Image (cartoon, rainbow, N blue to C red; front, side, top):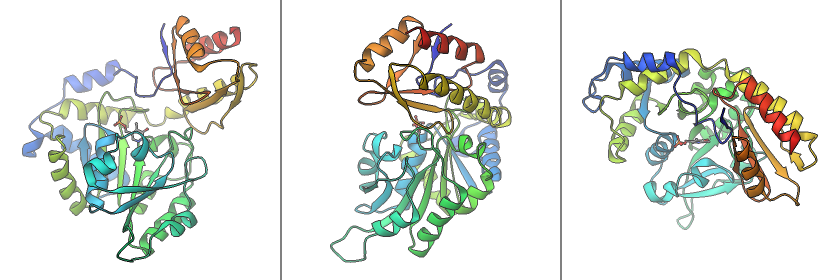
Length: 338
Ligand SMILES: *Cc1c(COP(=O)(O)O)cnc(C)c1O
């Protein structure tokens, strides 16, 4: 039994998902005649009550398309210091859109309306034009923390008042939704565009969906083609996404429960200095100075447990669909024996 805690992207399609993929009806999506992709896009758009959706190969692509459509070269996007769009998309903000980021030191990955107000540039010729605010919910690098509906509403107000586009990097938005009293529709009402990953906690092998109004998606579709993301018989992948949405949303709560239990166990271990608060399926913890992260990871690997370092003394564990209660037991035993 190999236990893989590196990411929630490591899941493999279940039998039911494979069957759904195998029997998908397909066509050519670049010609706009892919029945299963259309079905997925309509389903996600309806769920968030947005006009249109666009199926893309990755969450990096959905975010980068959104940035490209919302900005002009030379503009500025506001996001948290830890944001995925800034840290983990290969410099795509500048590479793809010729845009720069102004980083805001948020609270565990969450920026506030007040911070955004203070970060918007006045309209002098010599200042960069602020045109987009991007929030991440849940926030990955910050350890899976989530925004409250109220926080997102306040940010929406500021964006509206200042004519800024408002994008949600919702790679793990369903992890936030199952822990909160807001619905996908509530989020659809607030954001101009939303990116949702099907290949993280939802367990699909590939794919993300970008949401917005008709005009936004018309432009996004063009940018997707330019970025090389126009796919053909992508219905086989879309079928996995439909299956994921039908079966794997509510069970995210199990991942959260397991993450919290694992974190509680870890707090009492002598070689662990501290464990960050666990709100969803991500556990970030710091080893004490005597233990090198490389050695800790190697030691886990000897017990068939995979994990990765997350900077300095930190390690990240992510729970997911293929991390069972038996694996939780095993992991706890191994950690206690170290
Ligand atoms: C994983 C992730 C993405 C998208 O990543 P891809 O691997 O390109 O699908 C975007 N934002 C966040 C916060 C993520 O965790």
